Length: 171
Image (cartoon, helix red, strand yellow):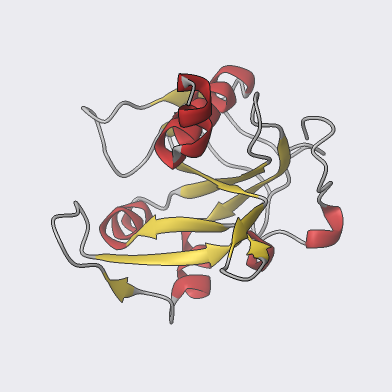
């Protein structure tokens, strides 16, 4: 298996690639490394406004110096016998910190192929995501860095009729 194939199969590698691309292409975002904060990936440096490729849900603009957690998921994922909409994976403690800081999520849906074509994006306040996650938290055992997590299908945040399932171009 090639290292590129491994990268595509790794959610961490895909997430890192998406974060880097978004921070480079969205002028109002600045990267925040894990040494600074592990509960968000970026922050706004200037006013962030919605556009056709970056719709906002529940807000009109994002002011400067707001923490932004970037979450990506594949457009589809296996559910045993078939496939279903991909899911965003949220750690409860990181979510709590984002809530306390009045932060935002930048959700990205992508196709798992070279270049990770993005088929949908959405900026959503952590308070709205909190409502969506209210009954979805569960304990994870073992030696993981988090104790409680939740999964949220992208279709609970983004209208599926607005998503190009082929991923022909960037939103």
